[in-house]
Image 1: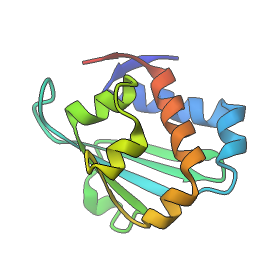
Image 2: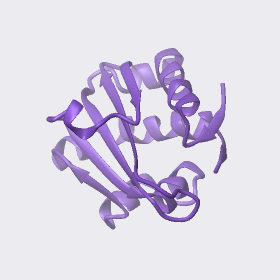
Image 3: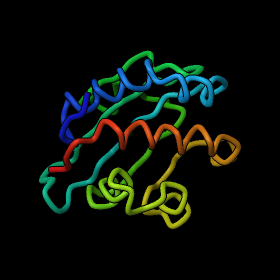
Image 4: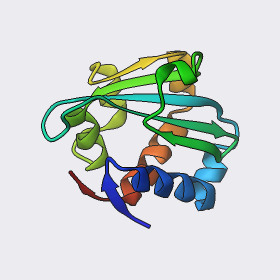
Amino acid sequence: MTAIFPSEEWLEGLEAKLNSDQRYGAIAKNWEGDLFFFIEPDGNLKERLTFYLDLWHGKCRKVEYKPQPESYPNPTFTLTATYTNITAVLSGNLNPMTAMMTSKLKVKGSMGYMMRNVPTVLDFVRCAQEVTEEIL
């Protein structure tokens, strides 16, 4: 299933992809941590967008589109990017690790854990790219 980013259908498609993709499941088998995303408006996005993913041992246990930050007060990671930067990652024009190192994708949480799990991060991005049919 592919969908337009950003949308609830896209997030649900990503959840389905993460839960059915054997490669991601194997690579992410030791990952423990949820993610709260803030997509800051610019370009075609006119208001801040949030979404939440609970990732656990190669599976996605839950997603939520447009949650309030106070709904998940202590996520393992909080990721913040402008709409332009996140869509550059999703379209393959910006390497996710480069985005993190240059603060185009800001990460709040254990950078050491993130760096020890680079293959998981990169395969998560591969799955996100594969469900992205089009970018608004």
